[in-house]
Length: 317
Image 1 (spheres, rainbow, N blue to C red):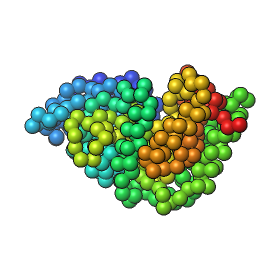
Image 2: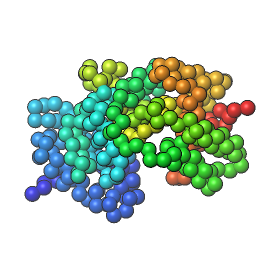
Image 3: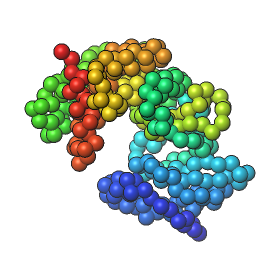
Image 4: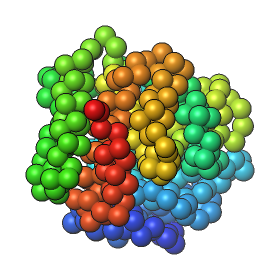
């Protein structure tokens, strides 16, 4: 008998599950029993849900020997197989350690971590250094942990170009014409510059909320932080740094010279990671515009507006 465990699903997780229709509703209905079964199978004490997340239920748990851990039960999505492959291949280098897993249940038992890098955001140079150094560890994941790119159309730049073009037709007015045009130029440049010999397994969503502090020093976490929730695909390493730099809109909007400020940040992370600053700049701009348009598309114009406002300030002459 699968005795259910009381679970509290975060509103954003519930909303996303419901948006998936029948698969998401089935997952929600089965979640208490699923968590209960996993706790019995892995000898876990369920200690209550964690805040945050959008596509999974996460809770604090205690192992039989008293060790703290995190139980994550994710919604049924194809990305889970890739995510697990990346985490297992990383073996804790730059990434959270996996203690147990059950892919059929979408379940991961992970090492317990501390706070995310969100609390460091006010010290931009320091947090960017942390990202660059931790990404260098994460990029050591073997290539064969994710599928190869079969054609140029599968490259991230091609996907973002298609996304920006589609969303711009529906949600961008004339005041964003120059912004969209610059983003598309950068997408074309990144696609032309694609180089399989330089590609790594990128995290794919390397923002501050996905970079968490380890509770104690260990091999593979020399920076004191590791990444969680990788998307995992092959791309040039500058892409991850572009994702990291797509944000910081408030700082750029308040800056007297936002282009010089962002250029300086690009130079910093490129130097610390051994990458190209111009490529980082272009990826960051492309990610900024696509994120702003995507948020607008999903009824979150108030969240997308700062991305697009900053993008206007970053237009090239």
